[in-house]
Length: 136
Image 1 (cartoon, rainbow, N blue to C red):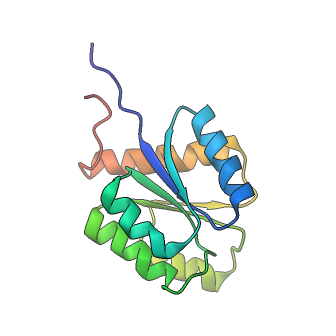
Image 2 (image 1 turned 60 degrees about the vertical axis):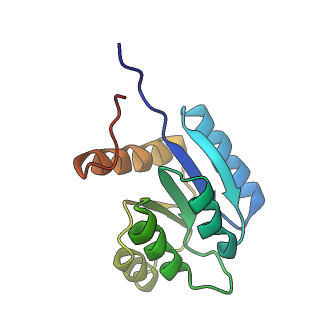
């Protein structure tokens, strides 16, 4: 019998209380959280050294680098899908986010079911694109 892979998820979230809560929820859902990054400047090096399957990213993260450019680099250079988290769902932010081609978009506050749906949607799309094979 083939074992199912557990996706490795990296969390990019500047608010550590939220990041810890998201990490706990993901772990309870059976996902492997490989780290929490609170500064965008550290994201690419971490992804290069410990490649996640999915990046869960707060779109409101601030930093010296542009958050949407980081998202594009993560997707294009590393082929790691992005799931955006945001408490801001206005049209301007939504348009920016859509332009970065996320695999899912989760509005805060969210519950376990919302988080699970976002990750499952991402995994299904990854499977369709050949980026994820659930049975190894």
